[in-house]
Image 1 (cartoon, helix red, strand yellow):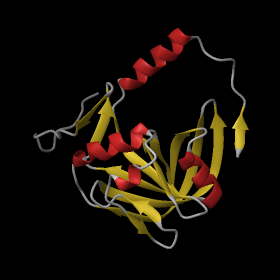
Image 2 (image 1 turned 120 degrees about the horizontal axis):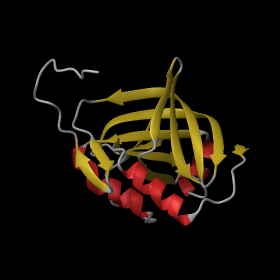
Image 3 (image 1 turned 45 degrees about the vertical axis):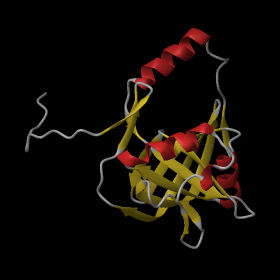
Image 4 (image 1 turned 135 degrees about the vertical axis):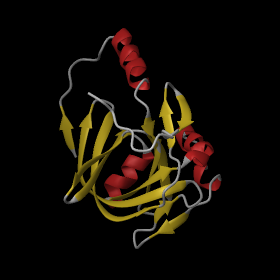
Length: 180
């Protein structure tokens, strides 16, 4: 793990301002999962996910330092990204709450040789990743993973923004484009 030096703590007003600023940036919702050395599943809701590159296929997730999910990823070197569909809000809430029994509240099954937790009823997509880098920045770790397996079924994605869940409402106008 690489630790990136940070500046002194920001003023509380700046922190709250950034939180409000980012709440205005709606994003998809995923649950990042892994298993620890004993095979126990871990996972958390994550809206900080991005594609880094397609060659090789690589994703980046941002996870809170100290989370058990991050510890499992660092230990095993593998993680899964479950993209939630619009009907997956309850699962997003379960994994955001930090309850220790979250995997008893959802339907999941181990996937692949690494037995990564796949949320079969709530995810429209799943990517299995091999951790290639971890960089700590402040209170979060940026986890980079090379995708080794991916599955996606077209569905309406679950979104999060303005501190609430929502769903995609595609334009009904075919062939419309944005003018600059």
